[in-house]
Image (tube, rainbow, N blue to C red; front, side):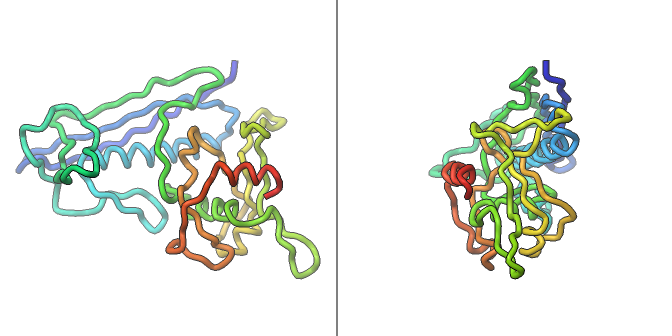
Length: 254
């Protein structure tokens, strides 16, 4: 049986429901992951899961969301969030379709705390848990670094020629042909892709080592949009990309 580790993340947001009244919105999720991911992989999994939990709580509590310069999900500061009506359902509801009138902040609110717990799977499928939707860009504390890595995967070959007649490794495909991660000699799960420090530094991203990318279930940490950062483009030039097709190309040498 595969050795596993349990990751638990939780986030709470206090919301002003009425003068001198507040409600707590809380979401807690547990996930079991294989210890073969290693400390770095487990921390990356926990960090990404926390960002998704935090985003969901802020959304359900009627808060507006901003991203910090480091890509951290933050609540947009304002004077407070008021309930639209005291006659709203007492349980959380899904967001209304885009064709419906926009609800004022707090439309999902309820007087008692919201607590959601996902069962922790076990065995080889551990870590599957809840599947989250992909975001336009990478999120979290290492968002800039991760986005730069995906930008290189999206547009660049596996190696560049340097001025000395040699080559600079840009990235390396680590995963198996069926897209499953390989296991190292010491039993740890290797990243699906590794992007070289030299390539990242070349495009202005400071890092002390190569960056590993572990692809999460349903590709939830793969950004929907990328830009040719090595070619001088900026986020304003970002376009949607076909990750599935590009992933297949990467296995054929990029």
